[in-house]
Length: 151
Length: 151
Image (cartoon, rainbow over all chains, first blue to last red; front, side, top):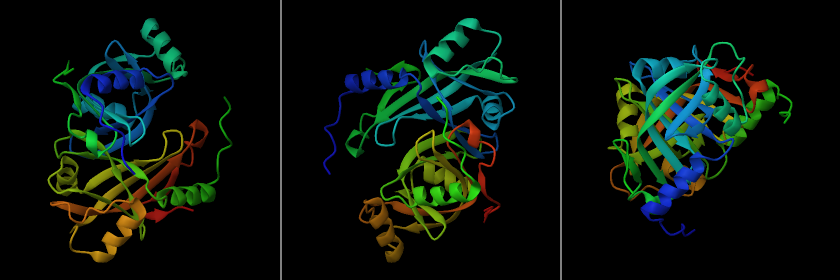
């Protein structure tokens, strides 16, 4: 099967932003314990103001890993049309403490964690964004580097 | 939207094995460096003899992390019908060194890394397997524990 023609950087960036803004989209959230034990779960994703936001119990392994290391890597989309984000933890917000964030999160994800005891929003700032479909898009896959969009 | 009725354990295990045996399926492969930096990439997956097999450059970050820590966590399927496997590295096999494994890998994944210089198969033994669709399947999500199927 011949893969589709490789997209240029500007197209890939536009496609990536459209994917991240999709209502009801999920991300695979990879984290690690400080001693190198990997963890991975799918979670609802909000993309807002150039940041990724997830909501989860503060006691969950993902939240504890993120608080300990400050790092995660997110995978979005089907495996043959992926967006990958390396992120750092910007801030943790109790679900009752930011009405605007909570409203935006509920509107985009279709799920409102307010009222779920012990849940927090983790606001994640991307440092690197990559996107590719097939092998012919591995070259040029980095769309953001050191927090700055390349295109 | 009402989620589908929660499946019982035996059904979930059968569905999980069917998913893992799907031709041409990919896995999200989460690994970590020994000091807790998470990594995540999608890779073709072979499920054979109760093990997961991936093929990748020995020099890749995923291979180096797996060799260093011996651990990965794999996510398979769409995010609302997931299979998650915690795995340990069983062995690394140069792509030229095991004809049977190479033939089975190529047949299931539709891709043959023989001839790709520096590629290895990493054979991964699951220690825990989980599967769920929606929130009503979080209870009972563990299908294998300590390497033994629960159902």
